[in-house]
Length: 287
Ligand SMILES: [Mn+2]
Image 1 (spheres, rainbow, N blue to C red):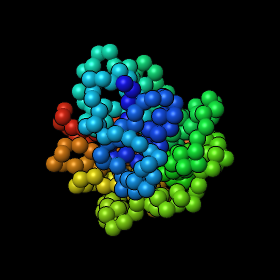
Image 2 (image 1 turned 180 degrees about the vertical axis):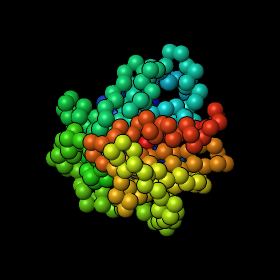
Image 3 (image 1 turned 90 degrees about the vertical axis):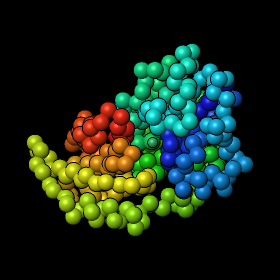
Image 4 (image 1 turned 120 degrees about the horizontal axis):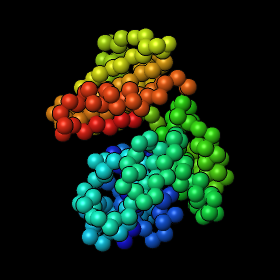
């Protein structure tokens, strides 16, 4: 049996990538974690007859011969599939846009720095002339639009734009997306941004202005990347890093944003991930 899955707290890119992959890996089952972002959950439940999936608990792991992990850079971000890790003959395919995704254990890894993982899958669907429905095209568009801030984040590439053009031609509906992609900026996010700005310091590193905000959070807070985007915009710095840690659960989330063509943020974020969670058990996610 083949399964396709993605990371916990799935966003539109994650879920769009799963369903795009079901068109490429014929016969494979989509497996979605229980923790979907609220806007994704709303979309999927509205169209549940068109997007069939299982939860990890419904999958007999012993029968799984291939795992296709999309938009999920590491095992710790998968839900309920840990036992698969020990399976020696498991074939693993990875589709991702996170650098340093765990390609070492995969027999096939499709990893490119593009604004959204689903871009890579859409390119394959187009190449292989696999037909998609307008509602699939709409879901895939939502994946690209959410992960690229409607094509405005510096991570956006020409490949994203090409995929968007293709999806619009297939009947992807931007009006539907508008309803689901309202920015997750509410009181919780406003409060965090306010706290970050209150203690914000600007530093000069080589030729760049840098600001690093460190903040404790409690539980999963959606929309943190938007908070860091706004933090960078308001402070008008070249590089902004948000380090969000959960003391009680010994884990953190590091989100970096830089002006175009300035700094490779990967090493800086990894440094902060290590600094913010000093214990070996700590789990860190770098975005
Ligand atoms: Mn993504």
